[in-house]
Image (cartoon, rainbow, N blue to C red; front, side):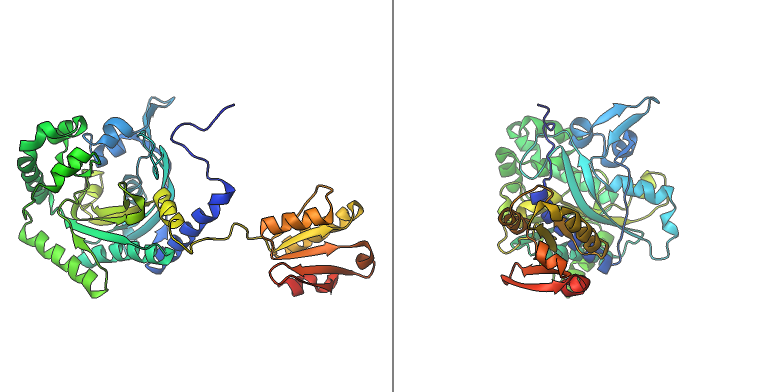
Length: 414
């Protein structure tokens, strides 16, 4: 038997309603805030991610799926969406939009990392990017969207953690400060973080190893921002305060990808355990220019869909219905299937979600299937009733049944 590849997972019909529920709420919230959907290719030139994410990151060095196509090009399955969206922004001249580019996306990403709860090698993200403004209130808006999204989903016990890396010059100072603070503990770091110390010290702060977490928690981080970046961060906080978004300042939030500058944030959720990050985001003011565009500021975030599903499954009262089925059409005899098939099709053409069991089962068995499918009504075709131009309609919630003229059926069901 051929099985799904390790690190990939089928999303079965029993689960898909929850995924659709998340996507639907996300689209509603994003549209309210003025963001429009974009879909970019799953495959890109590998250099797009090497240049944007950084060749010293774990994603590029260890996790990216890269292959050579028939044309000899180095192709990668996208490990994240931001670089692809920036590439599309430049290539399709989205800067010409009078409001800037406010975009959101939903789709699969790929990283060859060890599968774990809430993260597969093919995983899904839902996120947004606001490209074109350096106004600190855009930072506050992006964080607000992420919070309102969680609130609408009904997810509780989440925490917004906020920090600023400053501009590129500030970031260099931040990296040097972190190196100074961590240097005495290098030998106590895990083997991966020992390599990170020289290549990308900020990634040490993302390590989940207990030993590294303990070291990081005890390292003090001093203020390293220039006056302009300090002012920007104060305005971001003021914007969040003005609209009632609660947050904590966490100088350990650094986001290890090379393109992040200034505001960075994470949202954690208590029920997820040690891997508690449900959302990550930040500002990337240099990325558009680095990928060949004009000097353009931007900020965005991404939620892990699998972790949203886990958080929702742990939240009482969040149970989207499996079935959107309006009507199940049942028959009292096999000879009536032709009429039942015709009636089912007329209901579907009228926009009424309908189903029929094509197997020659008893009426009792058909009723059990209708209940299992979550049908709101069962329309029963009996030979004598059909001769009179009528059918029986049973309301499954009220357990009430009555006869209805076939000519009135669609109006009655609506």
